[in-house]
Length: 444
Image 1: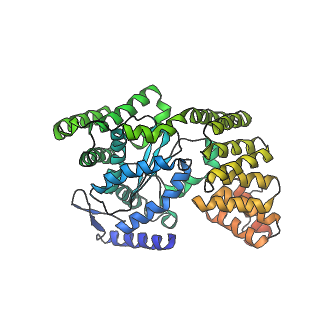
Image 2: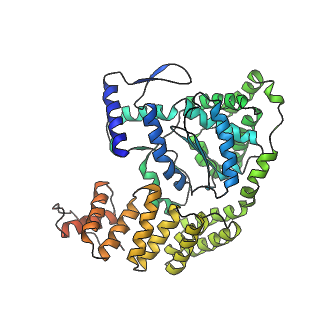
Image 3: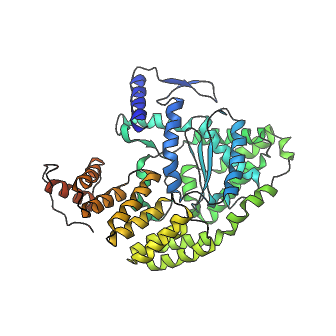
């Protein structure tokens, strides 16, 4: 998939150089320069969606809630300018407030944002806005702009990045998931157009446009009260008083009849009841992340443990506990917590990563390999997983496979102790001949 996609993008760049890479925007009907056709657009979104979900702490384990969101999203997509796309909608466990749209119709909303809402109309306003980004091809436009400015740099490895999101720095630095993606920020004009489209779609789908205005007011009030909580949302979706006033005026002038529709609350409340009941657990998770950032690993583990007991379905909580216990060097307890995370969600990256690191430090090389390989199935190869796979293979005496992992690290352009170790081993084994300028001690 990646090689085919890289060839298609390279071909699009060549076409652009001759001024022929133009597509018709489905919303405006106008021709515009684009390096991505619809198939490339869908491929990029599909390729980035899994890593984005994992970076956002995995999907919320609540089938009823996921089904409810999908119903709302599919209803909006059906009345949009691009109803034939294969849309997907996921509630993710991140407790900050945000929503993301990838090209091709892949959309996420965080539990933090959803927990602030009180009606289905408010949810439809946010999801409709994200659908608007997809239908107007904003992701493809930003990608084209970045590529034309940046030239051919890194085409073969580029995947469209969603958002830089707030999370435990240690966790995301270790995981490196976001490093796979090319940062995307929508322009103010894109945001305004998506506001207009989102309200249009929700009105078509039978919702009260007042819900759109209410969702913006909820976010603005939350940001004014607790700026850091909504930092990610406001960085990726700048929300100004002018946009709120425009939405309020648009609803009154363009959709006066629809403003009389009753708010939809009953199904929304039923579907989000469990999510909101878990709010105390995720407040504890936030506290644990802050303690982890302050290097208080044991204190963080205690918060995550309490959170895990309050929300026994969500895998990210024992996974974070396992990561904290690895930092505290309580490896057997870390392994037990990682296994609990895997029981709740076998595909969650953070749990498998913690399990792999604990097994490595316990010298259980085969289990470390199993856990780390499973972690990579969710997000692809990461520096941390590749390095510890190499070390585990080396410990088992499989120098050939270890060398392949170390070569991947050097080819990635990574720097630091892990890259220095990989280079030193490859030099010692005669795989490469370049002499390092500095000798660094082996990392653990």
